[in-house]
Length: 80
View (cartoon, rainbow, N blue to C red):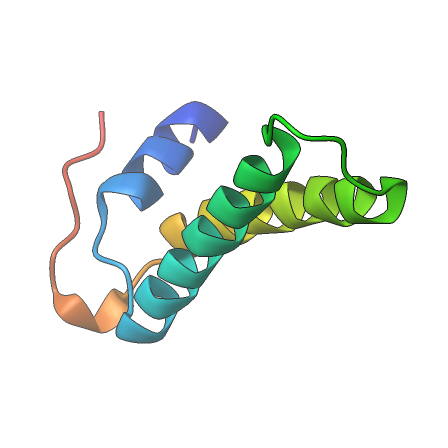
């Protein structure tokens, strides 16, 4: 199976409720980090560094959560 079709298959399949909550938390974490990074004022270097880590961690959390499949939902999209 092609890796891209596997990723598409997983992205279209239903996500378990626990990972839906993790996905929302990741989006919030990435949004807060982005807001701090784009602030129009000068911030301490430590805060900017932590905001960069928050954006990275939030993005990874959202990506992993989106590709987690609920096998018990019974819905599997058609694969080419």
